[in-house]
Image 1 (cartoon, rainbow over the protein chains, first blue to last red):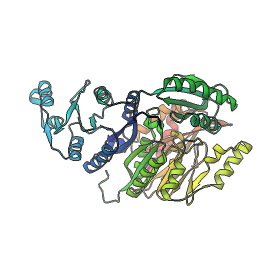
Image 2 (image 1 turned 180 degrees about the vertical axis):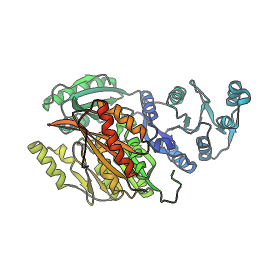
Image 3 (image 1 turned 45 degrees about the vertical axis):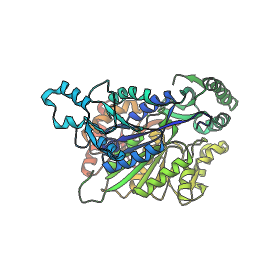
Image 4 (image 1 turned 120 degrees about the vertical axis):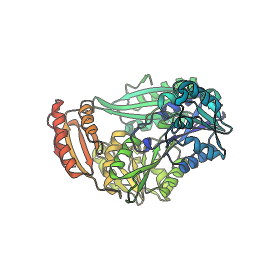
Length: 254
Length: 254
């Protein structure tokens, strides 16, 4: 939504795994990645979830890496037969896989003669690729071109993100503030929200309704890159709501 | 991943909303849809998350509806300026929007002369579309071609799914029974529900809370492929609720 003169840096997330598509596993990596990149000023512009099928991963990865500044993938880098993300990334870039000597050395130190074929699969990196540090547990991820290949296990993924951030060309950080309204639904909020949104086209203004046995209402989230503007619009929004007869709006912790 | 001789029916999910891409909101609709469709024998084969940008929604929707048997969308059907899903679906199908008389009649009954322009936005349906019932709160969703357009609020989305299931050409028939609980919220119901859900992993067990001026509670919907198991679990559920101190649960017509 940003329409200022700054360059907008955009990333896509490619979530790989049958367990997400079947509903067995609840993905939380998207949210963590989006928040992490948001602070860096990089917008997540599109997400796809694809199964553990080579052709589908290749097709999605090629579509996304051509369209966005960066692609972050999660999942499919473990030791089992359905962990084919490295194969798919190599195929997408038209290169071979090789056993990365740093990963093999780490694994030999850890496993000794227990370093079996399944574990060696996790040392495979596309030719031309570079490692992404894993500060948590297990082998590293890797990066090639504008693609970063991360683990699917959330705590490992988050650890790897810390080594991705410094390599990204980010914009300015995004500032976010939340105004909470109780006892009014979106039907009543829509008109005042639209007034404020139209007055600040370079900000994003979202309404996230909640319904609980105790009551209902909405959290209104203001996001922008100019901290002074975001600060000012918090007051402007509350005043506009009051002018529409909606009392009690107040800023809360996000 | 069904590898029997039955036809594989595949669906895609299109999640629409800046709040998901920004990480502000944790999506849970994908998991709920995947599990619900899984019981029907319909596989979720791909998911995309796109922002509240008309062209991006249209492009993703057209790609997905041509490739898969069904597409379910979530989000962007509220009354605010950024709720543009109906516009995007109409554009993707090359048709106009019209104010659906059934929705207008519902809204007039509910809001009377408070039926403002923002609320009327939610009555817009593409020409050729049909309604998807909303048993929870607010206006219905709609369907056109092989696309089903559902709310983004999880409990409303889950309620709408119950009207989508019977319209899908699934792998296998599903039996559904409803148990109604009055005076208990989801916080109290969660633990006994989880006990029953874990004991019957091949069934789906949904909770659809309602809030009315007369009171609140939840409709618990049991779904499975084995009629005898579904029948038995109705009794098991009521007994498990009673053992947790929740009295008065009773089977009702769906």
